[in-house]
Image (cartoon, rainbow, N blue to C red):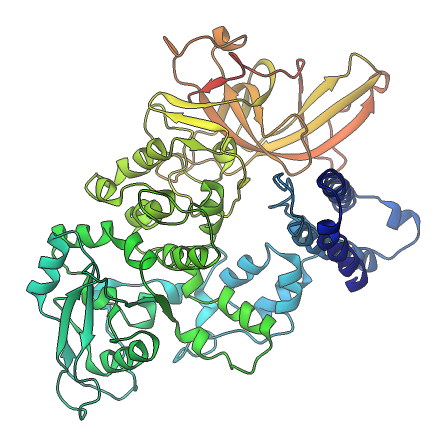
Length: 600
């Protein structure tokens, strides 16, 4: 396998010695090969009978081979990023983890060895990473005993959940009970009132240990600017507080020593000292959060789990340790890392904020496995990454923040409607996810849809049929006769988890007359949306006027089968479960000059 990947990488890097046209053609051939391999492997994984069965290969060996093929495909997708061509990579987020439907022994092995089920879900999105994780012991945070993950689920890790009513700070030493130190509150508040970033300096960090240390506060926005270190951490490590509450002196001393080693003067910013509890001033501090991390000389990450990893460990193990750390699982740490990382990589910079430009889809995908104790903070934590004014959002009611964020971003990926999870319950925005922190990804490339106050404007492929009502737990087929041949294509569908804005189950029945698809080519395991479209809209949509609300219901494509029209069709699937069958009209696109106004 390594030889195949090495050759692939070699050809990608050799594009510097070819013409631009040759490079583009090679890239396109590689993309085509990856796409064909992905489709073939998906078919082999889902099929009850395959070439392995016909060749007499045992089921266990066949599954191991399928898993190996997925690992190769995933690696080649990553190698494809090395091509220096002015084209988007169509397989940037290509998911190969579908093989785990049939081959999940690695998942069971990790959970059995004490890994957190939530961490296992994270690494399971990458088959290569999942396989490597089985060679490592589970990573456990400092002062956390084995077995603590027994109450964790695939959706959340309990040790990352903070109960603020029982919250206590952690000292450097377990038996330490030193006094708390804090900066002058008035100086912090005055700096924030002036729209500037407060940073602190510990004047006597080397003094004999005992009582509190003296902390001074200054502005990072002076002339010349004060270089400072921004500290990034998770509250579950016991490092959370406010300016008024202060921080254990032993921790303050430790941070001061580290800051002195990293920047001249030893100034640093940390929420526990520089973000007050006073609500108006706290909102100001949150509004400055993007600038705080973007303008820092360095971002210092403190995570008790990462600290347990040996500096002598292999690079792959260090990377896995970071990826599965509590710091990587929390919401606020995303912007704290991305601003500095992209600035160092030389990303394009927004002229107004001087912060790096980041694609909307990339931000969404980075949120996939992150969690927060305060759901209303989500838009605040990512606003600076999308160049949206956090001051505006923080002063809005929490239920209006997501809608406002989308309106300010305006251009979003059309695939956003296919994200799983609860939706907003706001007219014109019932297509919009209530949260981006769900286990689903969108294409990170082109933002080809426009968010307007009236709804989402985009172009979609739609399968239309006569209005039909289904039970929520019912499976059904769409069948389509190809008028140019005798072939018939059938799509087997079932309801996905259907939720309303409160996250509870919808009615047991739903009515639809169309299915909204990601694109013209529909494959197994694709997620689609059942729609009830007004009869007047089943042609060209010319106006947004006088439209009543459409309804949506999430579905998943289970099977795609090809039959000859003469052979007829069965209303029973091979597993003897009853299936409803619906006759499909010709696929078409609802459009008005290439645009569909989609307003559920």
